[in-house]
Length: 94
Image (cartoon, rainbow, N blue to C red; front, top):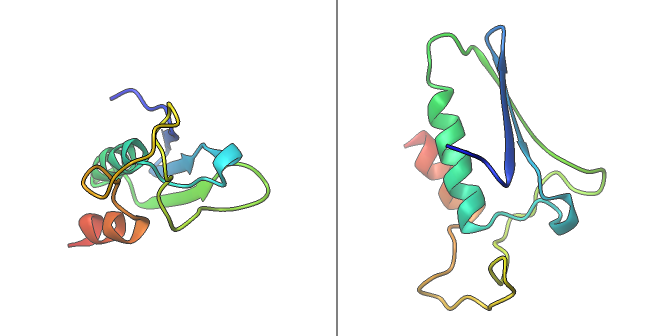
């Protein structure tokens, strides 16, 4: 999978996942959450012993809310809203 919102690196048993949306305080969009799920699934590999989860920029690690619009600026309605960070975390650990 090609990532647009995150940077995923693996080296010597360590995976580093960086949310790369500093201009939006690393708020998660639906695409960001899908990318995070994919990256964390790759971390289930037996060769990965540590996952470093971080955010780009110097103002915020991550916003615990979804962006209110998609990449084009079109507002989302409740049926197309992206999952929240909390839903993402639950999907990874359940």
